[in-house]
Length: 157
Image (cartoon, rainbow, N blue to C red; front, top):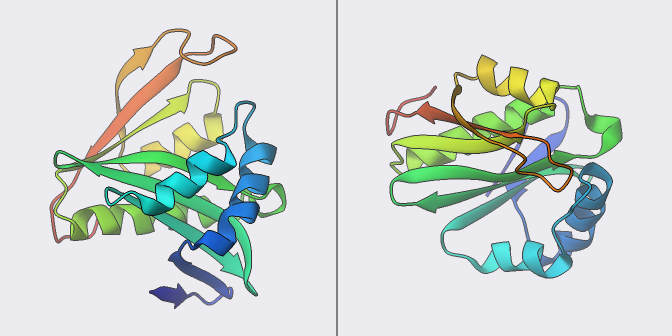
């Protein structure tokens, strides 16, 4: 399944051939990146969906969501540095929310660094609310903000 928008970004489910690109984006985005094996494992999980955003068959970003006990959890989202700040994160989140609704999930949850202001603002604009915090959650002792958005299965948020 794939869809193309006006800007020639194609949205599709990830394939094994995408893992090197996912790993490159992951390593350039996070201080403690997921490994090749962890990314590959997500492709095999029945409870996971890995979406990619591609331009001319080059992966520019990805989003991973899990489906567990009536909830969708944002497990990971990242874009190449030259594609950040261009609305692709919002479009990816909209796609993940639509997928969660299609799967009949009651809510979507996520965890984000307290100092990741652009992501926090995006999630708030999309209707996510803070539910709690995890103190010193990350390796560098930064707090994690836990957020959720209630979904109406089958409707568009």
